[in-house]
Figure (cartoon, rainbow, N blue to C red):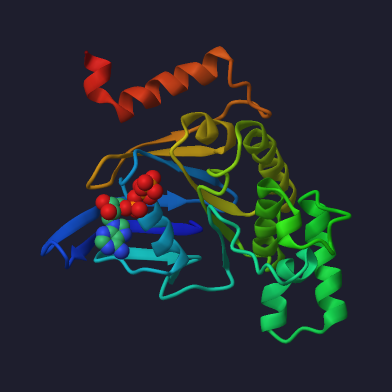
Length: 254
Ligand SMILES: Nc1ncnc2c1ncn2[C@@H]1O[C@H](COP(=O)(O)OP(=O)(O)OP(=O)(O)O)[C@@H](O)[C@H]1O
């Protein structure tokens, strides 16, 4: 059974201010297997976040069905962890309390929260920063805290919406390597939204290329390149060229 099954999903938003409908997604079908690392890639406005939000259960499809582990998605759940572009940490709580926040919500004792938090703090490479506050950390470190917080609930699926978009190039590359390491170690399914071709090709077991509005799937490309991936390699660039053609058919033809 697929881990995530998206069948003929469409999403229409009503733009009340302008009195018209916006079709964000049109007839999207995608099957995601357990432990796949799916990168959703496409131009701005093609509906990547909309699709991710529907898997997260923040939003509902206008048509079609969406299941996770065979269950229809009816709302957010502990089986799906979400990481956004901004870590959205609680500035008044130290790192470990932020990481263990969901456990606190569930009434877990402090000693249990502290112990669990440490496992994931170590996993994301923040050992020694347990008692720091978010304002004392860099953007990349705050994102690690957000990732640790999502991992702590041990969700089968992690949904990431441009989590490294606000980081500088070097930190982004470090975080990409780190995320692959964490994914390989902890196992689980990742759906990762990006508009960076290099990022998608560096991370994904599959790259799902989406076309401009209304968002559709142009192609699902399995990426079998050896890891760590060489972004200057010939094969990498062959796939990149193919994706550029998919994203810009008009320019490719010119
Ligand atoms: N709540 C909403 N109400 C109305 N329109 C919306 C809403 N959310 C998204 N849209 C529209 O749906 C389309 C898809 O938006 P979405 O944010 O999913 O795209 P995206 O591919 O993630 O873009 P980006 O890469 O710029 O973040 C856009 O045209 C957007 O304006």
